[in-house]
Image (cartoon, rainbow, N blue to C red; front, side, top):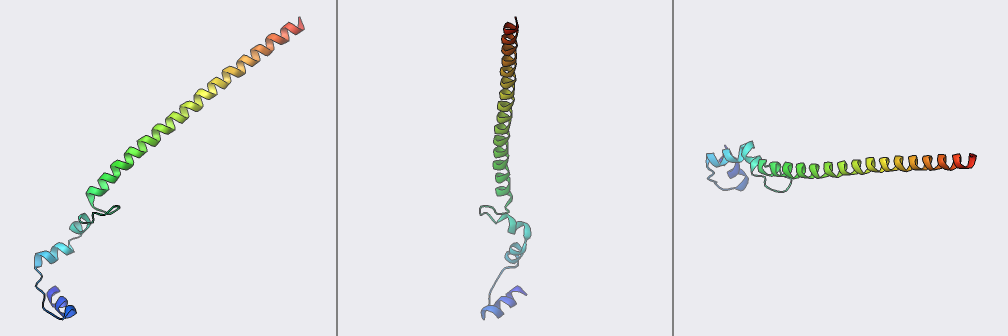
Length: 97
């Protein structure tokens, strides 16, 4: 059937083997053969997943570091405010005496 359709379209006889035709029409083989960047080939998709997992880990680490810096800054601010309050209380008590 495919050979007849090819002959009709090309205007000459074509000798396509049945297993070659079946291979071309096999969806799993077709997907696996798409090796371009962003293509659906399992090997490429698996590699891309690994790259994205590494990037995600890097971003999580950066976020954790930022959260820690903010927490440290909040602690330092509380300490400095407490120091100012204590200093102000000491000055007020000296002035009142």
